Length: 128
Image 1: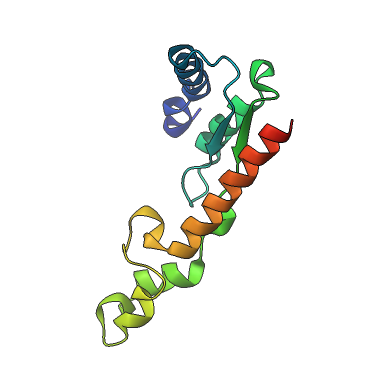
Image 2: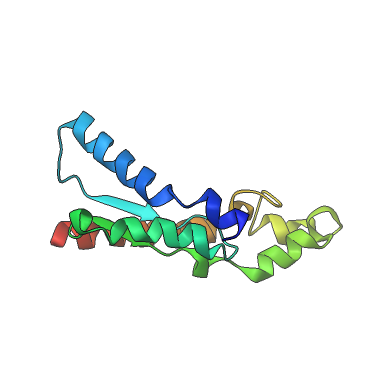
C-alpha cells in the first residue's frame, strides 16, 4: 500500500458518515446527494474512495458520483504552464482562465461543464 493510498483508506467511511450526519441534522434521511469528483490529475485512490460512497448499499438510490476529470482543458493548462498568461498574449489566457495553477485554472468552461453534470446528477436522483 502506498502512502497516498493510506491517506485515503478511510475516506469512503468518513464521507459516508458526513452524509449521514448532514441528513440527521436536517431531519432529511433520504436527502439526495451529488458527490463531485475532485481533482483533474488522476489520483485513482482518492477518486475511487469518493466514488465508492455512491456504491454503498444504503446510498444506492439517493447518492450519485459525478465524474469531472474529463472536463479538464489541456489547452488552457498549456497556456498556464507556459508564459502566455504573463506575456504579450496574456489576453488569450485570461479569455478562458483566470487562476494559473489553482481551482481548475479559473476556467468558466470547466466550471460550467461541472455544474451542468452536477445538476444532471441531481435530476437523475430526483427522477428516481
